[in-house]
Length: 290
Image (tube, rainbow, N blue to C red; front, side, top):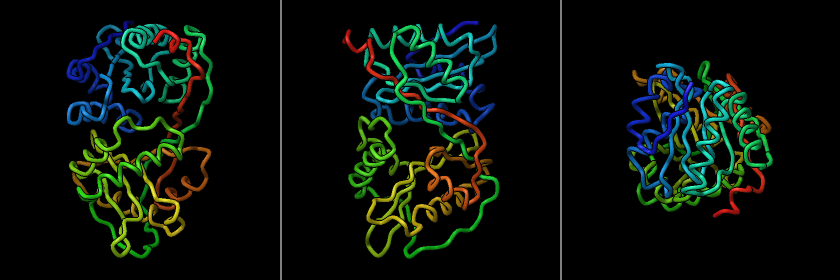
């Protein structure tokens, strides 16, 4: 078994796309990162890094790191975690920034995190359970005042601010270039908004890869909450997506500890189908070398 690494997205894609597409819901974010690095490299201020694990000629694991976000891993053999971590430490030491954590399927992410803390002396500050929810059967939800439409170019600045607020509220790493991300989402028609009168009151982003549409982020400013805008917008985005002949599944991630968001999406027909984790590292010894 061997861990391979590269900074070339095309080399990585050639090696792992078949493996990722074999489980397109659980590995969806890894797939969409490939697409984003290809189509919108300006959204990443630091060059991404990629890894895959091969057992003879078969790929059995993949990982990508797009700072400031955490290392993202697929399911992978536990015995590969140590070699993967050694290579990630080398990448962080040579190019920076320090790694803030690891995300992925619960078992594999925790094995990688354990290997990281053992190798670096860092501690785990948080292990947050995230539910992978798949659409089972779309269920009609109430229609609030207003209507859905695609976001417009003149709304990019507002949406960028909302992306930053969303990250702060859910305690995720802040986007390094929210304006570039929002601009790409609008340009590629991957964000819809709910409008009441002339006011935009909610946004829902979405991505598709390998026949799967992944919903998120969903954000409603505090002053517009408790009206059902996010629930209905999620429902309508999902309904439109699954009517497409190239879409087989719809999915989204939720914080297992947030009963409100889990209830909202369950009402529209989503059900938990897998457990992922977001693991944050505490004060990092590697940071002292930068």
